[in-house]
Amino acid sequence: MIGDHSGEVDEVELVLVGSNLPHGWFTNRFVSVAEEVTIQFHKDLFNQNFLKRNQLYFIRNLLEKSSNGILFSKETARGIQDRILNLVHKQGFESILELFSILHSLSVSKHMRLLSSSSFEDNNISYNSRRIEATFAFIRNNFEKEISLAEVAKLANMTEVSFSRFFKKRTGKTFIDSLNDVRLGHAARLLIDTTQTIAEIAYQCGFNNLSHFNRLFKQKKTCTPKVFRDEFAGKRTFI
Image 1 (spheres, rainbow, N blue to C red):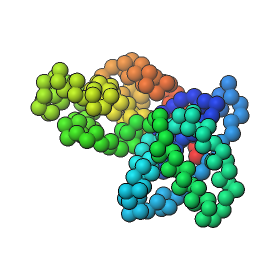
Image 2: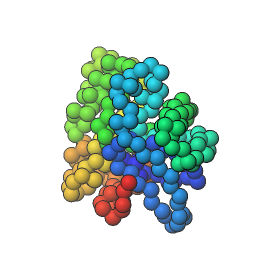
Image 3: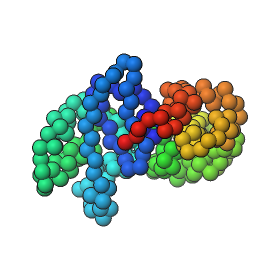
């Protein structure tokens, strides 16, 4: 579990988890033992002025994305596995250089996937479009209310059909899917941070039908709201 993402650990997996993002690996009835190798470094290792240099653009971008948790492809994980395992044998300056090198290799690797939703950590993603960013700002400020396609299309000064096509092309998702993702991200955070009932959280996050909320949550998060809350309710030890 990483943020509001939950999934089944594969045979070999490599993830990069940003600071203060709740996460943990748990065994299940299929896997009784799992071996974990962790590289942990302080964020001050990468001074912001240092990261602004053009040569470090890819690493800077990688670290920014890590606030949502990043899952790398199995090909990338296997290709860098030995370097990660051997890092423990390096010391001092060599260990720092190798860590930089590993992060650079990961930053230019293909097929990485963000895990936790941006709304869970309240992160804003840039789409290089003022219309799209204005739409998401409107969603973030009004997700608990009823929001129609006509309303946001008018905000973007476009017809509903044109806006739907434009939104899907820029974000890769439909407007409704994106709206639901924002609502579910906030719902996941409330499930962790509050003792409100699931029904209260559903209505507070803009879902007028509890059954629909439960069904959509399970579809997106692979577990029910109750199971998700139980996993984060102090019954587990988190990293």
